Length: 329
Image (tube, rainbow, N blue to C red):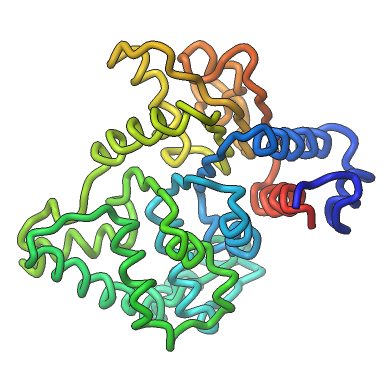
C-alpha cells in the first residue's frame, strides 16, 4: 500500500507534525522514496552501524516482503547480528546506564562473555558460538566440494535449511535476514572480513578446517557482481540508494556508477535515481559520512536532477519512521 495523507496512524502523525528542519527532511525523503517506487524505480538499502542489533528488522523485514527494497548493501556486522538476535534474543541484556559503566564494569561484562554494543550486550555463547557452529558446517561442506559462495549466500543456506529453527527466539516475521533469504534478495557485503564471523572464518582457515581461503567469495567479486546487476537493472528501471549511516555499506556500492563510466568507459549508464542518507555525522573537513549529497555530484555518482536528501539525526529513530511511511502504516 502506498503512503499518503490517508495512510495509517504513523503516516498521518508524521504528515501532521513533521513540518520543519530535520522532521521536514524526513517527510521529503519518505515522499521521494514513495515517488521513486511509484514511477517504477527500485531501491537499494545500505545498513551501517549496528542497525540489526537495534532490531531494524521490525520494519525492514516487511519492506523486503512488500518489494519496497530490492537490494541490500550491509556490513558484515549487520549481516550476522540480525541472525544473532534471531537465535539468542532472550539472552541479550540491556544496559540503559552504559554511560556510567566503569572500566571494571566493562571487564565484568567481558568475563561473562557479554559483548556490549552501546546499551545492548550480545551473548557470545548463545549467539556467536552457536552461529559459528552453523557456519562451519556450510563453509567446510562447500570447501570439500570445491564450491565458493558469497558471505550472505552461506547465511541463506543456514536459514533455509531450517536446522536452527528450534533456537529462534523472536517472531520470524521480525528478522530481515529471514525475509531476505526467503526472497533470495540480492545482497552485497563489502568488507565482510571485518566482522565476528569473518574473524571466525580466518581462524577456521588457520586451523585448517577450511583448506581454500577463497571458499568465501570476496569484496572485489561483490563489486563485479554489482556492476552487472546495476547495468541490467537500470536498463529498464531507475535504481535508488537509501543509506542508513556512513562507512563502507554506502561508500562501496555508490562507486559502481563512476567505475562503469570512468574506468570501463561505458556510455549511457544512468546515475543513481534517488539518494537519501540518514546520518548524525557532522559535516567537517574530509568527512565523507558527513558530506552533503551535492558533493557526490563532483564524483559522478549523482546528477544535478537526482532527488537527494539528508536527514541529520539518529538512524535508529528515523529509519523505522521512513519505512513505516513508505509502508503506509
